[in-house]
Amino acid sequence: MTESVPCPHEFTTILNRRGRKYSTGGARSGRCIENIVLFEGGLIQPRWISRLRRMLERQRSWSTSELRPPAPRRFSEAFSEELHRTGRFGSALPRSRGPVSIGLRRLGVWRMLQSASLRRFVECFAGERLIQNGCQVIRYDEGDYQGPHLDIYPPKHGKRYYFDFHLTLSNEKCVRQELFYQTDADGHCNRGLNVGSSGTIAIHRLPFWHQVTPLVGRGAKRWVLIASFDPASDD
Image (cartoon, rainbow, N blue to C red; front, side):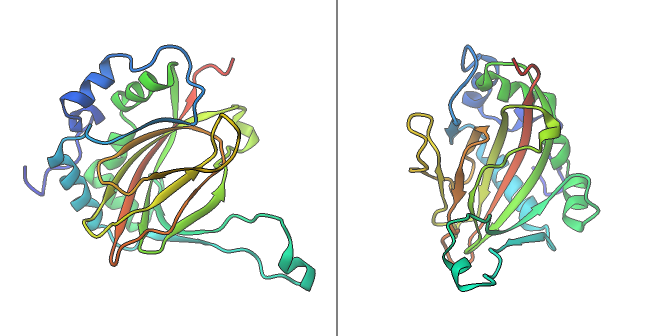
């Protein structure tokens, strides 16, 4: 495989034998009601993990989001319990005209994230038919994070829940990055997963409270390829 080879048209091309079994075997039956539907490594071919990471490493000039709490105007506001979303991370969207988005388009990353085989893969775990609603790529550098948030859709979507697919790619300097999330059992945001391992696939049923801790590792980088899906029916 040479550096000139772009992403495949279909997501299932990068899966190994075990991953392809997941994509064709109906991993779940019935509708899913769990927040973390899937969190697993060892489903992507190692050569494609390396290939995709090199593609992303070559992309420069990411659009950086820095979400900071507003400075208090009065002494009492400094001790307010109101929660503002905070975070720092880079991102790219398929319709953006930025250099990273254009580069990912030329490499076929957006096409793969919008492929029918990826939608079918997620449907196996969702237990229902889905409609794709968008995709993006997020990049975390050392110390980047996202504070507690819901990732809730605007009301115009009219959906009670949706599914996010995440594929993590990270460099060898990445030590860890934790996802703390709200559980169905008691509603507390007290479960944690190390999401920093390269090649890990996750599927989330959103919205629910969660946060991503600062990326640990000198010179560490982590990329997350994301595709979002609405239920075809919202019964």
